[in-house]
Length: 366
Picture 1 (cartoon, one colour):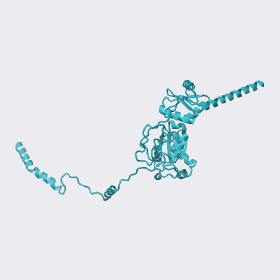
Picture 2 (cartoon, rainbow, N blue to C red):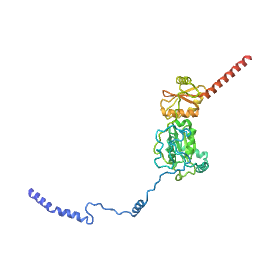
Picture 3 (cartoon, rainbow, N blue to C red):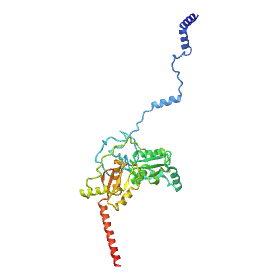
Picture 4 (tube, helix red, strand yellow):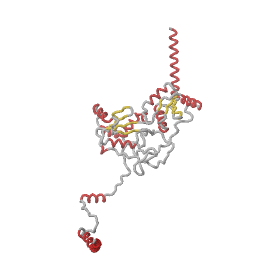
C-alpha cells in the first residue's frame, strides 16, 4: 500500500505542477510580470519640488565678501602687527581660508582690507546694536545666569588668544543667548586688558563682567541674528612665521662678561614663581615689577609649561614689565631689568644712602 500511495503522489505532482504555477502567475499578476515592485502613486507636490530643484542652477557663493572693518589674522590678541617676520614656514600663496573662497589676498600672516573702513560709521552701527546701557539689575541677572561654571554658553580661550574662528563661535552662541561666558587660560591671561579690547572690537559686544580670568560678553539690546556679520572661517591653522631671535648672545648695553655674570647670578638665585601649564598668570607682571625694585635679575620656572608657551610668556613680559630675557636653561627663564632700570635703582640707592647719612649727622648734632 505504501508503495502504491507514494507512486500515485509522484504522478499527481509531476502532471499538475505546470498548471499550478501557471495559475499562480496569471491569476494575481495579469498586468505586471511576477515579482515586480508595485509602484505607489507620487504626490503632485513632491513632483513639483523635484522639478524645481532640477531646474535651479547651482549658484557660486565664492568668493565670500565680508564687511568686517579689520584685517583678518589667525590670532588678534597674540600677534604684533608692527613686527615683521623674517621668513615663512610655508609659502604665503596658500590661504588658510581656502583657494578662491575669500575676496581678500593672504600675505602670509594677514588678509588686509581692500578699502579703508569708515570708523565713525562702524562705531555708530555698533552703538545702535548695543542700544541703551544696561541697568544694574539687568547686569546682575545676566551675571547670575551666565557666570557659573556649569553654563552651557561657554567658550574656552587658550594660548591662541582671540582667534578668527572664535568670532564665529561667539555669533553662534548669541543666536540663543544674550551673553557668552569666556574662560581664559594660559599665556593670554598675562594681559587681560588686551583680551577684553580685542573681544569687544572684533565681535561688537560689550564686557559686562570680569573676574580674574572669567569674562561675560554681552551681545546688545538690538542684536538680530539674521543680520549678523559674515565671518569667513579659516579651514586650517596657518604655520607661524619666523621672527627674529628673542635672546641674543650678548644683551644690549652689556659686554659678554657682564651678560655671563648676570646669567650665572640668575641661575643661582631662588625662583620668583613656578608657572603651571594652562594656568592663570594675571598677577605675574605685577610680581616681576615688584621684584625688579629690589633685584636686578629674576628667575621664573616653567617645568610643566613647555618651550613654546615659555617663549610667548617671555615676549609678553618683555613688552609689559618691561624687561630683557637673557637666558633659557633647565626649564627656567632669566629676566634682566635692563640698563635704564638698573641705573634708576642705583640712583635711588645712592639718594637713600645720602638721606640716611644726613639723618645720622643731624641726630649726632642733637
